[in-house]
Structure formats: C-alpha cells, structure tokens
Image 1 (cartoon, one colour):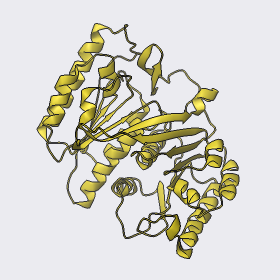
Image 2 (cartoon, rainbow, N blue to C red):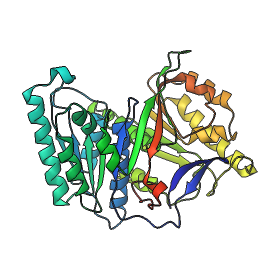
Image 3 (cartoon, helix red, strand yellow):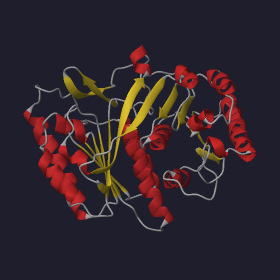
Image 4 (cartoon, helix red, strand yellow):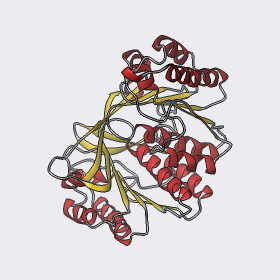
Length: 381
C-alpha cells in the first residue's frame, strides 16, 4: 500500500495507491525551476527505491551523475549522498564532473565542455548497460541550456533507455525537447513572503506537482549526513498526518535508514487508513490530527531533533483538522538549530507560511498518471 496526495474540485485528501496495478515501465522525470527541492526530490526517490529493494526481492542499483559539481565546493546534497553511500555502499555509484565555481554562458571554457562530455559518456554507458534501476542526471538541464552537450544526442539516448529504468533529470531551464519526451515534469517555483524575512530552518514544500515528500526524505538524509561529517548524532523525526494504517512504502525507506543508522530516525504517523474529504471529516480525524500535533509540538520544543519533518501538515490544516495559531506559535519558538520541514498541498495558505525561509511550490506540468500509467512502488509512493 502507498499514498499520493490528491486535490480535486471537492477538496484535498490522500488517495491510496492500494489495489492499483503497479507499472513496470520506467519513466523519465524532469525536476526544474528556480525553487529549492530539485536535487532533494531526486535523492528522496533514490532512498525510496533502495528501501524497497532491501525489503523485497527487487534489485536496486543507483547511479548519481552530478554535472557542474566538481570537487572543491560543498553543495547542499553532499551530506545526503554521504549518508546514502555510507549506509548502502554496494547500491550507489556517484560520479561528479565540472568545475567548482558557478559560471554563465559567457564564461564557458574548453574544460567545461570536456567535463560535460565526460559525464555524458558515463551516462550513456550506464543507460546502455541496463545495470542500474535508477539513473539521476543531476544538473543535466542547465548543461543542455548552456550548450555544453548536444540536445539531440541526449534525447536520442534517453529514448533508447532500458524499459524498466527510471531516469531523473534535475536543474533549472530544462530545454523544450527534453520536456517533450519527459513523462513527468515538476517545476519548483520559489515564493518570497515580503512581510517577513522568514525564520532560518523553516522550509515548506507545497503545490500539486510531484516532489514534496520526496524532498523531505532528502532533507532527512542531509541531516544524518551532516551529523556524520561533524562526528555528531543528528536525530530526525518524521511525523506524518492523514496516513493511518500500515504497509506504506515510506516505511521501507525509513527502515532502511534505521538499519544503517540505529536510533537516529523516529517515525510517527496518525490518521485513518482512508481518504479525508472536506465536509466528510469524522471525529476520529480530529482526534488523530491533534494526537499527531501533540507529538510534533513536544518534539519541536525539546530541541532533541536536528530535523523534524511534518509530512502532510498543510492539507491537515486546510481540512481544518488542526488550528493554525498553535502551529504558528510553536514555529516561532523553535530552537535555532532545529530544522522544520513542512509538506503537502493546500488551497488556502496558512499564516505560518510567512515564517518560512524557503517556500517552494511544486507545479505539475506533466504527470504520467494523467495518461493512465500506473504508479510504481518505491518511486511514486
């Protein structure tokens, strides 16, 4: 069983993926836009895939190919990848290409073109081999936009990928030919709240596009990885609303983390194992939502966790299962070194959105589910 968030004209709910046929054909995912969350979302998919592979008979092997991210500079996702590689060294390969500093179209050198081609040669070989179940082409989009690789050759290669392979391309400014062959296109759009500067360590991922909960999983990996780098223990709490019952694929991902990093990840969920629609809320929905918030509020105040993920809190508030004011006050008083990641779509933005230092909206431009393609366990839910 798994879930995907659903928003219809009738409101917001969590649609279960139970009883659906799972697709076997791998898809081409494109995450672009100026907002935060693109690489995090890709790493979240990687973690889900690994977790499913560990707890099933499926063979999962991942290639992380990172363009424009040469050695000598630290990037946000470095810590998350460190956690993945330490925890699952036999399942993940990483290749980095490019120089360490940022550059524009007017600053391109022969070295940049050679490095991009080196990375693409690795990608072509990996795609042709069929040895990987997931290939992440991080920052491929700006590489194509800058003209460092011929778009036609990339498109031709991606069209010939093995049927079951998932390919994830990230970065700003995805070219139109890539978007045309993509099965999923989710744009991360940044929002800036001019009334306030925001509070460091409060991030919100919302919108109808794919990438919200997967970005949050990427943040969990990042927290654990930072702890490894600092020789400290960075504990993570993942609190999920509207996801009662058991057997969700996130469980396998979280279990995989706890297997490699015992005592670092706590996981709580609340809610009925059913869709909650506006106007059809039951008394148990309110009780479960409040139970989840009591756990979250205590965790935020305690300072025991470096990262707290409040998954699907936004639709819970939008459904009026929880009031906004206690959440606002708890976030205002959070410890300075505690990160709070809030996910989920909503029609009406709660007041606590104004506190976010990062607010990234996932815009759904294309999704294979709209074409009747079945969801895939470990990737979509």
